[in-house]
Structure formats: structure tokens, C-alpha cells
Figure (spheres, rainbow, N blue to C red):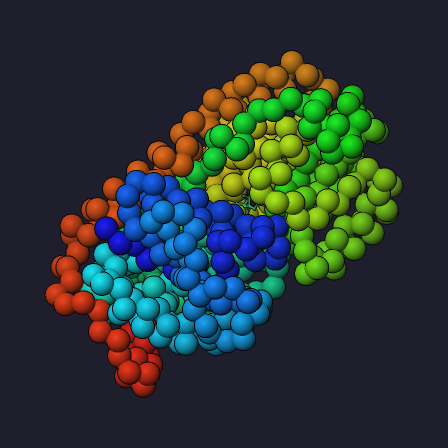
Length: 423
Ligand code: UDP
């Protein structure tokens, strides 16, 4: 079976921890690797954004295809919508050259959802979509800038027309039904996965030594794309409220686009008298992260919203307890009082209280650590990959099927078809 994975705005091979490179990139690459290992032929389509080969063989059965659309350099995520018609035309043209075309189109994020819907129709193949984050939910959180109306409209349209929607958590499924009218019968909750060989418990002393951390002082860790929705400001204030005074807070992630927020957090830390406790590490390559997770006593995920939250899962796979906001996917990954704590209020006091409990109690931490690692078995990529593969088989069996191979429409006809589809 040949699968097209569509990830227009961000490449799965891009360095992680930047403004647009986080969980979705990891998900698309790791899921595709697993499907390729299972024998599916997978092409991941992304926008060409540098001097990179148009087609890259990443592993047996797995290619990344870069399609020219707009300037061949990184551009704002919002600007990509303008280049979507060109991207989609590239998709159709590439697919037309593939003997047999594609059997399933799986799109990620709303912009790819629009492009993927057109490709799926052209290929007479089922369209599976995963949104990763939802504009309506971000807007209701009122933390970052408002998401454009085009995004909300597109999400609604793609959600209503897709053959299947993958949601990473039951909560995302509820939101899609409530805010977008998506049909529950077409939604399938399949969690994201974690590489349990890369993310596993390691010797804490070695990890601390490598990172230049004191062996006996408490270490807290935050990892992610440095943006307001992640709630790092709550964590900074929580650290200021801790009774222990020799705590180090490692902040991992963030590129040049995060300089403004970093300056705000530093100013806040200075006001609250803990600037010396914070170490900004910048973006760290994914395979170097286990040392950070294993060096830390607790990983903190204080997000205002998190559709799944891979960081929490990676930390727990390393045997590090997690203190997280009780939001989105975190509710289904962190077991409150067993592998970490879930905090229902987005304010520093309750975070400080639970962090204090864990930092002051090594035995409790050790218990949480064992439980955390064990509980991650269900997120093994093989298990997740098989669930997605089963979904592909099901949607394909139900789909009316491909009457004839994909037809590339002429440029104008194609634009007209996109407009007519209302996407
Ligand atoms: N990440 C990384 N290096 C960094 C920062 C983040 O490899 O410097 C990875 C992290 O390991 C995780 C992903 O980026 O796999 C973030 O995913 P998560 O689901 O937590 O957040 P999202 O990006 O989806 O908001």
C-alpha cells in the first residue's frame, strides 16, 4: 500500500525546538518510519525551504519529497496559505508520475488538510487527517495571537469531509465534535508514540556530569517550542515560590524567533529574584534530550493547552516524573499521583506545591519513576503504527475505490476545482 503523508508547512527532517518544529515533526517522521518498517511505501510531502534535494530517501520504503511553493527558504507559517495552490499542484503532478498513485492520503495540520483533501480526491483515495492543534481551541485559550478565520473555516471544512480523523486524545475528539461538528463515527483516537529505546532511564550522575549540573541540587526541566501557550511564565513563578533555594531550572528549546519571549521570562525571573536559577539551553537535538530528562528530578509541562504533549511522554519513558497542567492529551498520559501530578489551575501556587512535594521526597520520586517508565509501554511506536495501519486498511476497504489513476488537472481547472470544493 502506498501512503502520502502531507506536511506542507514544516519538514519532518527540520531541526526541532524552533518556532514551528516540535511534536508534529516527530510524529510524522516516526509514524512514517514505523509504517515503512511494516512494509508500507511512504512519501512525506513538504514545502521546499532550503537548498535541499527534491526527493530524499530517508529509509527503505520512506522518502521525503520537497515541493517548490513560494521562496525556497523558511517563511512564516501564516504566509504558507498563499502558496498552498502551488504546493497542491506540485502534489498532484508528483502523484501522477507515481505508478499506481497513492492508496491513502494522510494530512497533518489544517493547511496540509486542504492540500491533502484535493490530492485524495484526485487519487480517488481516502483522506485521513490529523490536526495536531486546533485554531478554535487556541483562540479560546486567549494566550497567543488570534488564529485567522481562514484557519477555522478550513479546519471545519476538512474535518467534515475527511474519511477519517485521527485524534491523539479523547479530549481532542470531544473538541472536534463540539467546535467543528466532526462526526464521532469518523474519529479515531490513536495516541502519539515514543521511541522507548532512545528515551529510557540512564545513569543520573553521568547525565548531570555531562550537562555540568551539581550532583545533589534539585533540577527541574522544561522542554519544547518556546511560545506563550506553553506557560513557561507559570513555571518561573512556581520556582520563585519554592522553599528550596538551590534549584536549577533548565529551559530547553527556542530559536531566534523566541528571543522576545526569552527576554520577557528573564525579566520576570529577575523581578522574582530567581534569574540565577535559570539556564536557557536553546534548542537541543532530539537524540541528546535523554541526558536532560534523566538528569532532571522532575519535568514540568505547564501548558495552557497541549493536544498530546510528547515531552511528558518522553520524560516518563526516561523514568522522570512529570508535573503538568490538567489539559488536553496530558490527562491521558500522566497518571495523577502515580507517574506525576496534574494541576487543574493555570497558576504558580499549585505547581510549586507539587514540585515541593516531589523534590523533598526522593522515595516518592523513585516510585513515580518506576511507574512512569512502565506506563509508557502502550506508547511504543510499533503499537501506535499498527493501529494507524489498521485504520488505513479500514478506510480503504470502505472507500468507493480508485476508478482510474489520478488525473492532473491544468492549472486553471485545478484552481476552479479547489474553489468549487469550498476548501
Ligand atoms: N524537541 C527537541 N528539541 C528541543 C525542543 C523540543 O527535540 O530543543 C522535541 C521534543 O523532544 C518533542 C517535541 O519537540 O518530541 C515537542 O513536542 P510536544 O508534543 O511536547 O509539543 P508540540 O511541539 O507538539 O507543541
